[in-house]
Length: 384
Image (cartoon, rainbow, N blue to C red):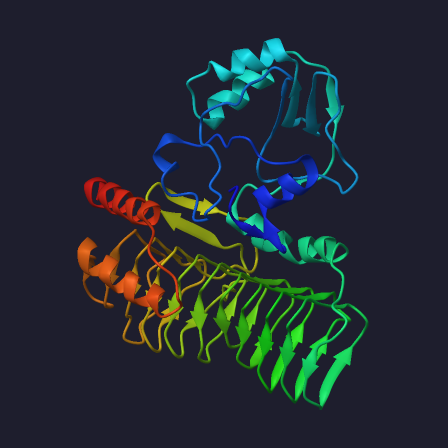
């Protein structure tokens, strides 16, 4: 969860702004190679020196704005749920000796019988709770942004409300409407808005991204370097993803390097108006959420005219070409599905295609990313 976009920044960036550099991230051993894309990858599962004690928090916990770690040993909670700990040096050295994943570490910390302090805030520990909370996170984050002195724009541009936050180098084309009355709009450095676009807040568009027209609705966060055409709403879209054609995508979560073919449409509401269920290798989960679209892993591709069912879940590197048939609820990592037959995507052709796609955006497939994708492919093919 540490690297996922939430509002206008990742969870790790939130903690660094609140408490300083993150010295270590504790994660399951089978994801240590696949959870981090950034060049400033933190130390994983190697505890730092603890001479001054340790400050530990659940990565997906979003505390209240004025909350800070104290100096005394304490367990921070939201109601009955532990979410953070301040440890003295002796206890900090003990936790550093644990050879366990995050669940075991949390269980050990929760058994220390420390003083308890109510901390407030919210834990966003599933992708659907993150999508549901995203609009409020954007509102929260927008207060910390200032606006550049100048914006390059071509009239007519319609601005409704006073919640526009624009960074350096933003360009806005003619016949663009920016509606900040429902919430703020934050446009990152170098963002370009093409003509005939409607942007509705709360909305965040990351540095270097391009909005190619159409409606980008409330509750949407778009990472850096994306190319997006509406209709999109209430979705989280990670870096360098392409949606350059028409087709609805709502209440969804897309990884990096996703490419949605022209006319790909996502359903985000069941015709029974019941809660959406997510399907995976371990069964079905009732999310309790009324509106929920598609969950697309990194490097997912959809063919033209694809129809994604409510709550669709596609793993990393999956290719869906449905031939106008509604997608299955779940497709595993590195799956090729043409609407009739499911096959495994071969690793080497996949990597060559990924390198070509990244090269077109002046990016390279790093050794770490190569190892990450190879490990995921190996796990997916052996478990299947």
